[in-house]
Length: 300
Image (cartoon, rainbow, N blue to C red; front, side, top):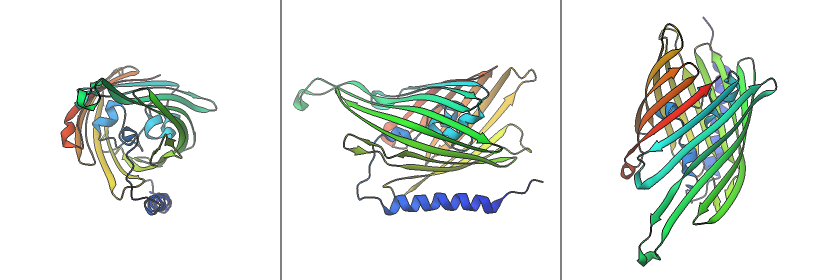
């Protein structure tokens, strides 16, 4: 039986805890909500598991959750996501392309969130209101044995009725296969970003992904998240059962998860190198209701 290195795990968790304490003690009285979609998720597979993805990310969506996961790609990968039936005509879409080379993995991704052509009453000036936020990420990842690391260079743009502001920053992430049935993931996100007058809060995610040999096909991810200027810690948990048919060209999966109290379920169909995923999402805020995520992911 492989011995779990609890001492090394304790060091990693201790460093993460110190970072969270530092973020909390330097917080101001103002709770900064800038670019909130960056603290949720992308991809219907991850959404279906409650976005507990920092430890198990290994496709093109890794650029969002933990860039270290890009080094798990075979050669090339892509990912797309479209959101449907979001309340108040909101939109949330994603696209990514990545490749794994001899010198490491490279990726480029785009996340978009906003509202288009919302009518404003004459009492408020009339006309239409347009609001858009875009995030572009250039990623690099590499690995050594059972340890992976990755970085993102981020460009953020915020546009309100044609008035635009831009900021830059970065992410740093790690994944460690500390046991043959478990992976530890840690990422620090959104360092040093100011867009216009808004400072985007730093975000820290620590997670474990368990894939027990006794339960072939099952994956159980767990995650905690600490955001700058906030006292609370978000908890995420999920599960997936994936079944591959005998010829290994086809497969299916079912998923469920809880993202800080918001429930989600999902399913996926695999055909050779392609995975079509769906997730049903309940929002954390009751007035936002629920919505649907659709994704197509390729790994070649």
